[in-house]
Length: 248
Image (cartoon, rainbow, N blue to C red; front, side, top):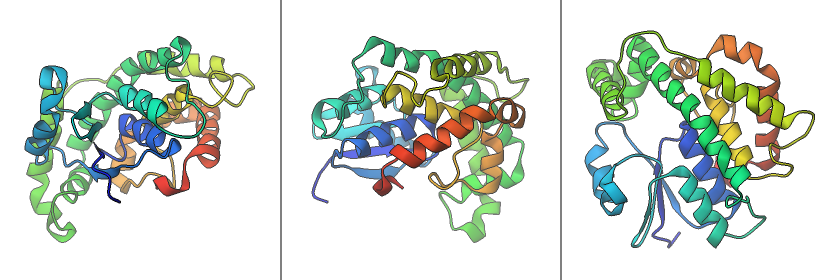
């Protein structure tokens, strides 16, 4: 691939999933690069230097002088420059779903970070993203530093109870919006990408996004997964129908 466009992300992250999905849906040429938490921060900051405010976070899409550091901005860009059916990212009702699920995603980020910090196996898996797997147990402290770095970056504590009220409110709203239909907004749109990726924080999708077992446990809320099993089934069907085969 000759393109200089690059998407830097965390493959299991809901924000990265929806940005990557939009780029693939619209066949926007780009390279995907996996970000390494903590160790990859200097390179991320360098790539994000053109962003307003300079906050370095992923997903981050760069193409020459263009730098987009918000997942919805990447979806809008894909809608403007790509081929294929529009994701209707400019429609207010579609865009509103990004704002609706964001508080719930922040709850998920807190829960997952705390779960990883409390699980030695999950820390080993996190360390394996930056070291040979056979040596990963030795680098658990480095993985813990990475998790604490996330907590500091997004301004939450690593201890305490994790709330779920905003997550449940977003799930109830999603259930009501879908009803007996196939899509959130009457036809496949950015709202579906946002809703489906949001459910990553309830139970991760199987077969499309790779997660090691302990990390998958950290992302899973069994109580919510049981209560909203219908939404997970909807998500799985949406992936089966609309996730581009080349996006795996």
